[in-house]
Length: 175
Image 1 (tube, one colour):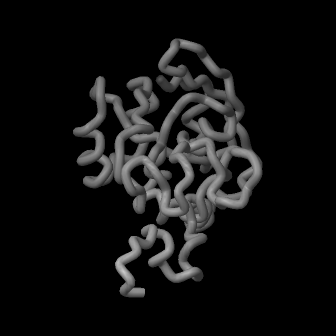
Image 2: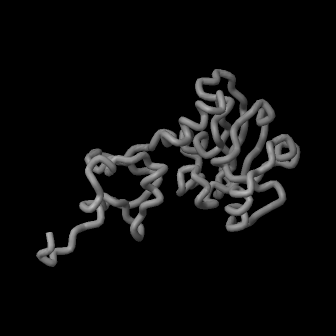
């Protein structure tokens, strides 16, 4: 109404859109709070009624992208090492086709990915070995734009959300 009361932002959104996928809602942050007024964290669940925080599965956007690329359900695995900012090395088995961001999330490796792989940030910045970097498809212009914002950028830097595991990753070390 027009009685002068201030309504919260989430109350102005139609009920049917309040449970949009995380890839969409992460772009609707107000300050550091989500529309439904819960603290923002990549480790919290999407639904406000959830009792406890839990790890999020890959977003519907990323699942659909994996399906389009034909990598969904790939059973082949490769061994690789991801190095956390603290220097801790995590030896992982990765399915072919998974993005480095999703792999990190599934294995509790510290790699932020604040935008959920929508190319709106550079928080999933990874540094590849030169040999592996040379075998990857070249980055798109949007990825290069985001990489320009990354800290400690190198010649072999890529965004983890845009790089998908192939057989070339066998034995690779990603920082």
